[in-house]
Image 1: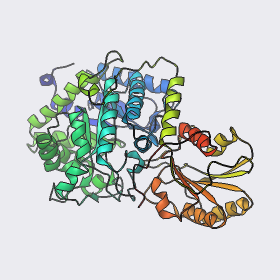
Image 2: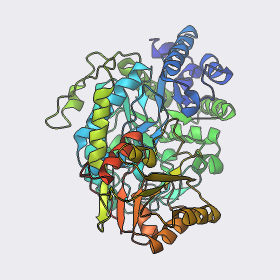
Image 3: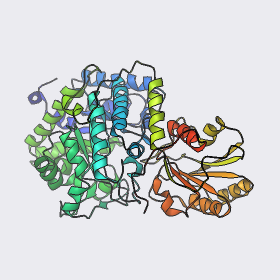
Image 4: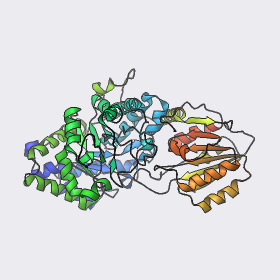
Length: 542
């Protein structure tokens, strides 16, 4: 690896940028960023993925391109949180449970095992950094962006699961990233769309929001991602944490003692890009203490951010020593993580953080059946029966009508899966006389009325709800309320457990926290009485 003092200013600043692009191959955008601007990091999204083999080749191609350009190895990252946020959902990548499902099991060792499996698979395809785990404490039912991405509303539990995930990823040579500092859980606005404030005093922040991050630092987490959220009790000026010197340097570096990489959330999110612009925000983030600047989408913004930082150094706004220190941290990380293989990667410090567990590397060459059994076991332990007025298990002598919502529209925190299994499909494998009607997650009232007419003579009715934002969509609310008046209704919240707060009490209410295939299969066994679920709500439905 080239010595730091041998790098030009442009090469140093390039190391501070992590950029996305829009192809499944090395297109003009990423080629230009690597060859001309010496970017140090790349982030993958669903748009970059055709298959696991293709992504493995792409990772190698990008690293070869960086080497040919005389650049440092790339830091290749992805948001592979598990559950409903998984950029790689192709065959060959295990669909591990999401955070709230794991929180519902009450068992951090499940979280450790999932992170070990996922870490091994990511490393095998050339990825060195996972932008996970989310350690936000989700205690706001209306949170539109965190929700089931959190382990729950109890800070101690979130911290325990977060430590387990960090341990699992880093034991496999994958940098873990605790996010979103200082905490995005108690918000009711999506920072992708606008500015957010967490108004609590410092004592409350210490007890709730900051506790999981302190524990993550103690566990040796490699990176921490910032939140585009304002915290007046820490930073009195009306600026988000990502751009605050008091938050990133004063609190995170100096007070909390974090020595790893501080990475921003994407600067193209509207909470940042609208009031500041990406270029100015990049400069302010570096001034605040960020090491790695994430610009995920637009070449124009990526180049503008790079050039703005270089110009800030040349004019004296940012000292070159600040850039030097950031690059030094990045290079230290790259020596530790980039290009490692999956042999003997256990971190002694990390392995001590989960009691009575021997952290071992996972052999990715083994068949996937053991992983499938593990996922089924975890799913069975996460499914939560909130209440049941005698409607479960299903009566095998009566027919069943299932209403299943399909995710068809992509958002920042929700994407259609390339392969899914509906509840009707899973139930039909266990018993006959199952009818299923599929709807979108945003059904119209007319669509709901057609279902009501179709379901009128059914003996057992199951309606599955799906909320990816803060509120159950109006069409789903309307459908549930109408069904609830005329049927002993079983409602299954496929994602957001808070759906119960927006409907009348149904006969039975079940939470699964996600609709991944392992969960749907386990759910079918729960509904028919073949499995006794043991999940407990990680949030209060109040």
